[in-house]
Length: 86
Image 1 (cartoon, rainbow, N blue to C red):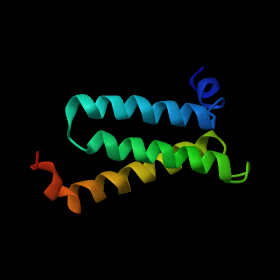
Image 2 (image 1 turned 180 degrees about the horizontal axis):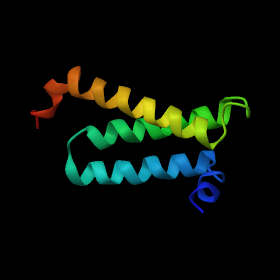
Image 3 (image 1 turned 135 degrees about the horizontal axis):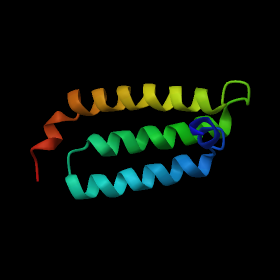
Image 4 (image 1 turned 90 degrees about the horizontal axis):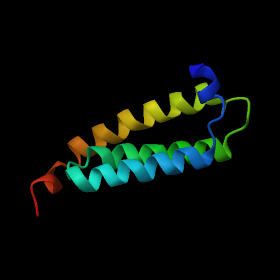
């Protein structure tokens, strides 16, 4: 059942997921959800540009997970000075 949901992932799903995460970020203001939203948009680009052999649902989720980890680490380390400023 869950695999059926994931096999239908498209670029539009990733773009919409990024917009939802951006909305959550606007409510929280922590920069973490913004970084994950950027990772979702990067996964959309991956789903659009990568060959079908590696851009199946497993490849997309793997790319999104890796990009999310990298982006949250980047946001927490290099952009930490922006967190306290208003």
